[in-house]
Length: 238
Image (cartoon, rainbow, N blue to C red):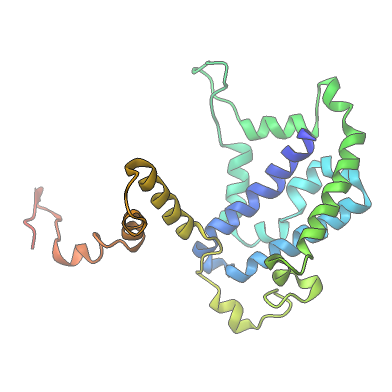
């Protein structure tokens, strides 16, 4: 099970998390809020394939290169991110050796898709079975009409899917965030304030996060104080 979950993490979770977190920065690549529905459509297609052939779950070319190829071919930063994670992102091993870095994702991919340990190699049949189970679970979740996700799925004509929305609606979604990280950050800030100060009122606890989000103490600051380098000296504020 750990092998399957690890594959899903690097092949599905990491790419979709990056896209969801960066959507508002991808306007110039014509990728916006509603294009997250495309990732859902691509995952649906992939899981349908796995449903028919469970061994695809440990096929590196299928899992790592083909699922989101349609997006990586047109969204340059996404393609660069995938290459960075596999070919450049380095770190130190947990054995305490600080002299030599290694490529953790690259080595993880090798261990998952091309295992050399006998105990991992023997999990191929089990992984195929679990791949089918996971595919069924994902497809069921995607199509569950009681959940918001189905609204973005083209195969069932979701009301916000790329198949249904107009060109103007898609255009309106460019430059917009596709995650709730801003609101989650405010909740986290309020929770930390309550934890630190105990008897603090909830509205007061929320103040720090709201102030940071709204940039209350930095808004238009540059319009009032402009300090620049001039002739090797700091110009006076003015």
